[in-house]
Length: 273
Image (cartoon, rainbow, N blue to C red):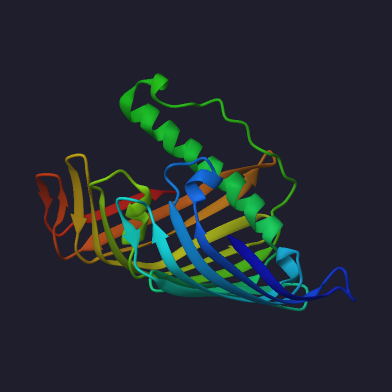
């Protein structure tokens, strides 16, 4: 069952004020969504208070406690998490997440529609670059799709974003993966993204992976502390985003294991100038 209670003040229809409580009791999410990968039994409580409905105008605090999340052959331990969204003026926005599994903050001068559009378009261009690189290395164009189309833009939308976060435990994701899958991860990240109308720059100041292990169906990847850092610059050419420079490095003092292969003190650098 789902029980929703609380108050909503609609005096300002564009930015209503609300205080809501949602209780979910023994909900069969797998049957509701017709998806066997979803929980068979979910019990949780959500407390939502704040104002605004549009992502760019939210001042919202969400507190949740997941009391039961049963997948039949596996289940998550009860846990709590919180999400706080805020904004100042027309430009500055922030979202913070705190949980036993991940925590972090995204903040800066941006709006969500512009950010998502930029990430989608530039992400597709980076994917195309990887596809073309694979094709050139393999001499087999059938391995990838090189017919992707991209949205043209006269200029980038200026923004400035800081992302600081920490992965504490990714093991719950294994609940959605095939049986026997093992996933362990612990990492800290410090990333910034700055865009003017002519250029965007992504700075990976630090992704420090202190522990990572993935194993499934006979495959295994394990690494002890490694540090990843670098930068990516993109410009517009004929109204399409294009990679200008790429510099990405991975360094570690401990081995990385790829199945039975051991790589001692890995040092990797990928550069495109």
